[in-house]
Image (cartoon, rainbow, N blue to C red; front, side):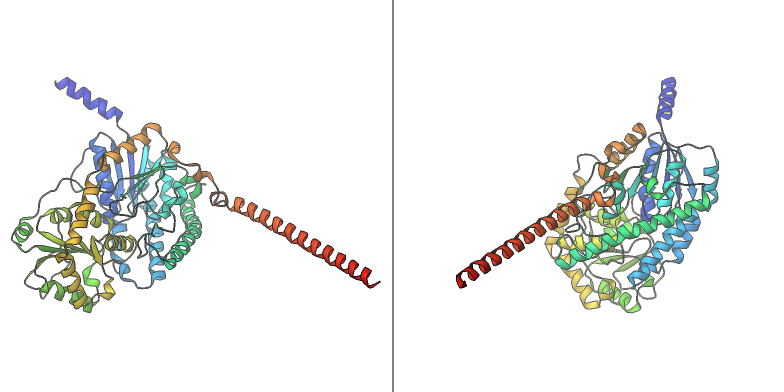
Length: 507
């Protein structure tokens, strides 16, 4: 039996692949997704190297971290960027940050050592967050690249996936609108997507400049994108607008939900003792409540104090005054909290992972979105009657109190969230198993070209049929010109004939 065990171990090890994970954006939610997938792949016998700002807390066999602490430190210095009211300025800071983090990846000591080593990899799994220059890892190791999209299946993926997402009903990743769009909404979506397509060219050029500073004669970003085998998309129709998918986009929404780890004793006692229910308030890992306007924060705290339920509040610092029904924690295991039967409402920033977890554990929401996909998620939450949303600037004591009472007392929100939960839970294949299957599919075939539509090879004017439309417009123009020419000639001929007969009668 011992011999068989050793034999099976060596067979599994020999069949295992070498996987490089590149999650250089220091967002905790982004990296947590990558860690769930890459840890599972390591447990299956694959050898994993993970570049991220959040190394594993526990030891995992076949799993090696290359930490990027400088990225996390920079993000923490920018913690007020999410409260920037100037959209243009906020976008500019986001662009500058992602460029800076991408370039800093190549100057990291651990990454430089990796690039100078003789390591080889069978596949590169990357978090996609405006970090196109890191596609160079696939080129260096001659390995296919798998993108993971934390924001789901969105138009920003279209240029390299060949997918088509109509602007008429698929809302953008940063616009507060649902799929039921007015004319104004559709006009905004069109401008937004066209502008992004134009900016993509500029962003690709900026990332190529980064590569030229660290590599000799690097391929263009457009050439590197051809090596993207598929996209693992954190998406599912239970929590986003139903939309088209090409075969190279695999929806794996909810794959990060694992077995519960158990609540800390103090939180467990607080939740267990709440016969009237509990409101859980958390704005995620990056948005700090302490950065809210003082009047808005005061309105929130007063509203929570008026609630008939107890409140578990995630807050970063100590508070001088707390309502009697509020317990403050600096950190809480969110999934374990949401799974508790006494949780009646989740007040959230609307990040996609928080939304998925609330739906999975059938907890209605009040969403306070700040930026990015939080806006789109908030609009979806309200449009599907699984909660309400309010912008932070619109919060007043009276309005927030009424919203809390509405969601906790109106049964429609619980009924609809239960329905959405059943959609998310009852999938034919577990999302994590689906993700692992497709990673191993790409490893086995060393490519994902067989999954791509021919759209990825077409220039934009062919993709959008500009040449065909132009051809038919020319035909229509020529046809109209011929008709007008014919009418003109007939008119002249008729006039000449009338003149001739008139003259004949006069003579």
